[in-house]
Length: 172
Length: 289
Image (cartoon, rainbow over all chains, first blue to last red; front, side, top):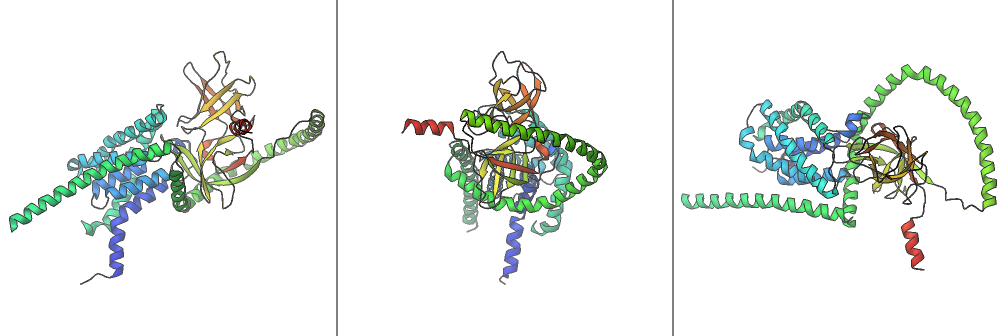
């Protein structure tokens, strides 16, 4: 039996849900919070999204999603175009390389995975930016961004896990 | 038949893997192409980026609403405690300002008379718009604000963004309704400044850090923590004397400037067109007359 238009639309929405959620998280990271920390060392929500969705649902988070997410991040930022996309690709490659160690593992293992892979992607971005501007960027803000990202991952992962459990469970 | 199907399946999965691998390589190449085009200030990249920003920013603005309502409510409750003390201080300040205003008016008249005597050419009056901050970026990779400027606002790239306390940054990108401002601590921010009292000149350079650096100083420059830093007017973008901040630390390797504004708590900024002639263009025009 042919599926109705609303089923096709629902399937299409579910297919792109990880990207929609990631774009929303990305925009949340641009909310002005009037605090010294948020103005200088925000969590790398885009990278955390790439990690989460590639680790949990790589079937729904393709390279196309990463490309779109990277471009949106670059457009919203004043950083050179391509820098976020570059970091997301590094994160995607790293996660796919270690996917057998983190697939179907407990939340703690995934948390450790993020803590290990985040510096790889961030340092790669830092190096590219330093080459672009021919000037080594300070590592202090990078370190704070990293610490905040790792500290916030349980909250971020929890909300994303809720979405996976409520909306994407049937897709498994 | 089954063997042929298995071989076909193997071939297909190998092909899929190759495509996936080459897609990653293509995307990496694309990243470098983007960055190279960005470095050359490519007009197409700028236009595409601005159009995309116009689509994305309104969604960010909607997301900002509940967060800013919560923050404003918290700020309001916190400010209630201080209101009485602030009221008294403001009354006292008002009294002093009335006296200062009378003195200023006398000085203004005197200045006008002296300017007429010297045949002084009055610079064009600055135009400004006040813009609301709708998004903020603060990572190790960039420090910026996105502001709502409305339609037909005549905001242009390179114009100065200031707040009540001094310079905040410079307009980096302008869309139909939104503009992106690179803050003074952003990596590509470079402003010619001077120490207010000693008139020692230098360059304030953003490092994507909390505080920007002061570089290109004379070797014998005598700098003290707390010295006020203002714009020098060199370069033709900023007029002379706009407050920028004060010297926060002086060491052998670096001098840090603490911005006059708390860059993390900006709600509104003024985008000013000082209508200063670009010295480079003027020289070019003079040479080609």
